[in-house]
Each structure stands twice: as structure tokens, then as C-alpha cells.
Amino acid sequence: MNKDCDIKLLYDLFRIIRQKLNNQLKANDLSEFQKDLTIGEQQVIIILSENKSNPMYMKDIALELGISPSTLTSIVDKLVEKGLVQRNFDLEDRRKIEISLTKKGQDLYKHLAMFREKILQPIFEKLSPQELETLKNILQKIKEEL
Image (cartoon, rainbow, N blue to C red; front, side, top):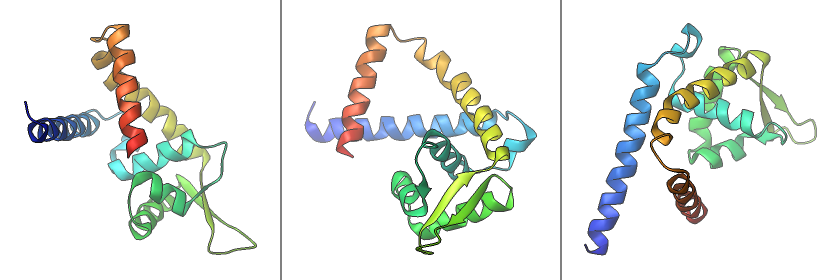
């Protein structure tokens, strides 16, 4: 197989995996609460929860998601309206806006984490421990290059 075919195959596999996981997210409602959240909103909640030991600013979240600050502003506006996140302005530099989860947002993250495990566990159970370790190492290398 040549390199161009390998690249196309890998790209198609990543696209199909992402598409199927997104379909699983849409098809399996965890609660009435989650039903109104977009994938982007869920991703912001996950990022905030997984980085709760460090302050997260708008620019950091946008970089992590690979989206523009204006797109993130729209997502955060909706999350604020839903009572899931809050904006905290830096008193010394009002351009710096820290985003944090509310109690309601933290509770929702717990549901998202349980849901993620519910969806992914059956997939990963089909891999041997060695295959899972290899997959993690390969994906980590890819992540580091991105």
C-alpha cells in the first residue's frame, strides 16, 4: 500500500469513528438535562472539568478545541444561559475572562463521564490489554504531533 492510500484510509477511519461516536451521543440520552446540549457545549464542559485545578480562560479553551474565540463565545453564551458555566473577569485585565463550571455544570459533567464510559467500555473491552496499550501509545504520539 502506498503512503497516499494509507493517509486516506487513516483519515477516513478517524472521520467514521468520530461520526459513529457522535451518533451514539445523540442516540443515547442520559437525561432530559443533556438533551439540549450540543457536542461543542459538552466538549467545553468536559475540558473545564478535566482542568479544574487550573484556571481556564477563553483563549485556552478555544485553543484546546481548535475553534475561533468568536465560536467559543457563542458556545459559552449558551452555557451561561443554561446555568452550566460562569464568566469571571480578571480585575487587573478585563480582557482575560476565566470560565468555570457552576454546581449544575459539575453535576452534568458526572453524567457525561458516566455516559462516555457507557459508550466506550464495550468498544475497548474487545481489545486485549496489550492492544489497548498499543492503541493508547499510538494515539498519544498522534496527539503530540497535532
